[in-house]
Image (cartoon, rainbow over all chains, first blue to last red; front, top):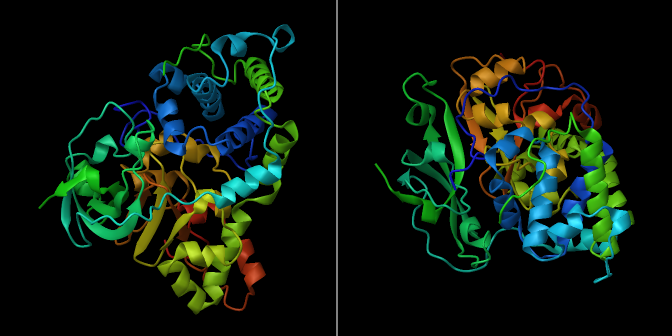
Length: 220
Length: 207
């Protein structure tokens, strides 16, 4: 989707907020939010792509006005409701006033760690033919899917060079809506800064993206 | 899924206690349902506050500086070479290491969200996840690097890596000039987190 999260190339957000001696979490609730995300993720009801898609569907004004972990809070609430693990009413009812039945036995920390270690990478063992090879000139397709995608707007329609074939990986666009892995080759593709940003960009500079087969067509 | 939050204007800096209460309420709800265990959450926080961090990445870098065979392996198969030092887990499942040289400066970003190599660097700093960095790193990397105090010479090629997949990137910074006699542990002390993201160049380097 052409959402607010797709920020590459936007102007106007101001200087980089560099902080000296930054703590890992700026408040205890941030750490709890982080841990909730990890513990819930280990239950396996959704995958990382679905989690990202839930963030992307936040109202853009709310997205911009919320800090990082506050976006995680809203995302987690949304996804828990979508998976009918909690109801919106339960979320909005103060802890002292609600009646909740225990419905499961939670994972221990050791189990969460073991599941995280056992989880395979996003690589797929499926044998799929590569559409392109290192050295090919390619064009990122000018597509505007309304669902989840990992092809940023700033690169669509631009010509780049396949630098490396990383092998076969699962496809986020389908995984985000639980529509299958659709395994396919993933490439490291370079684009010159001038191809992306025009002649005023530094002549030598490049931007590299990881791009799946479905996002590419032959270019040149 | 509709993002129907009643709290339409809630940057936590102005409503810190509200956010704090809302997270506590959610944790309490999920605990009552048996979906999460409070002790497990505390252990996860402790892991990322105290155990996993950029020191891991610094050890990888220092090893590569002193051991050419390891460095060759690291650049060819970052995943296996990093695993061999014991820093593996899900968020670093596929690692690619990018070598900075006199002629090439690498810098990493995630424009779409906040992808970052947790096992070697820990959790990302707030600036890495910030809108200014995510928006400008790909378009004006030299301007961004100036804000970090780094003036990259014109003849150096800047390569920005946008982490759009589950592949995670770690920058191998140049070994500082004058560090010749130092052992691995002392070298690891020279490696900054930002030098492994690519927004820092280590002292003694060119530029």
